[in-house]
Length: 619
Image 1 (cartoon, rainbow, N blue to C red):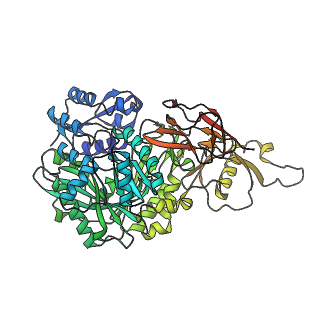
Image 2 (image 1 turned 90 degrees about the horizontal axis):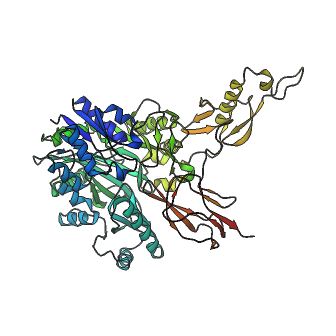
Image 3 (image 1 turned 60 degrees about the vertical axis):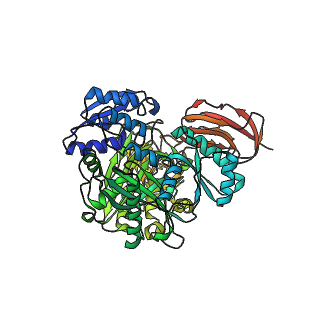
């Protein structure tokens, strides 16, 4: 077996690989950027090598520097994790040429499945059903628009080199096609260096079903059953679970057999995921499930498969890369219980889930579930990388038990001062339709108003804040006796300020439960409420709807400005497009008016809170 391993990745997946390697007695070497020098994965590895400045293009994507680090430390193998270089066939070949072991898919399989259009054409030739669409090489915008018209709206424009939800746009009408295409191509070029696209029919009642497969150099290919990743927001997965709700044995056999067939068609070796889209308008059944793509790497959601099968997939990767056969035969694998995973992100639901960066001054995640995290209290969430704080994974005998267990943990999350999606996750997992299994990829959009965190503190928040304030001044009798009069009882009303707004609390009114209070923050149901002197702008925002100020909601790069000073604009009209973490955010006019001030220019780097433009309303 491999005895030493360099990890060409960071964060939680680096820690995940280190954990398994340590159990197997394998020496690990971490690679890190300047931004990650003090992160937990760097400390936990047996050795660590700096590979460059904070931007990924100058560090984690520097192939030569990573290979040099491997040479310097004398490792036998390189594990790419997921993201970054994990599906880069050129890098895989470079690793193999240097005499190192590549703990990943063969370069030929990466190439075969790396471009979505070519992969679909290959699957058509192998008699695997694929989603109707256009996968041709002609990228002329007029040709693409004609193909979309022929397919019929709605359609999905997808980057051929895409992944992770980037480079995808849904278009509902022909009039919107050109705008969607331009935006998709721009994001695809920024994320993958390739702006080519394909066009697919958009399934109106879709479920996202994927199958974990594993192959070895001896010709064995097995599956480890399916996962359901239907709950998505902007094509990014929010909840992942295994097995898939409503999956009967006949449909499971059909989709898992098809996944093995896909893997065999490209002589697959290592961990891979075959993704399918299912039309569930008439229920989940085998004849309405189509191949979408294959991810030639370990998936972020692999822990749910590990939970229901009892297998360590990173160990499987290492053993297969060492030349061993897959550790289990198909008949030795079975489903045990139900598992769910959610991704706890540093993001602000109140601003359209924009990333929230800063120091994790306070971080607490309740016990009771598996926690895969790349950060600890005191670490920094930066604009350079994905803002994930942790993956939370539950495992229980049944689906509702797994969901309620995970919801309880999400509701108990305490993070300050960065914003998180914890309350949003808890509400999603507790939603009646989710618990009943009535899900598809439109679930979150349909129920968004029900799932969004509170905008006003409830009675429990006010009671907890008032009690904490009274406790803080307990040694000052004249300030505790609000409304004091001689020979009369003190008033039981307390004036407090929560999230920058004043409230009067009657302490004689019993609270419905209480929240956790740390310093001057109340944590309840996954939400954080500052009170007293704490920051008043905790709810945040990308623009001031009252005075027309367009404010940068996050650090990033201005990639487009569609107006000039003095232009007349309409409410909702795009003004500035900001890019951060390879995702685009359009900032729109809050009302009809005139561009009175314009400070944004294409290519400019901006920080959070900077004024980009100001709209003056019409009288």
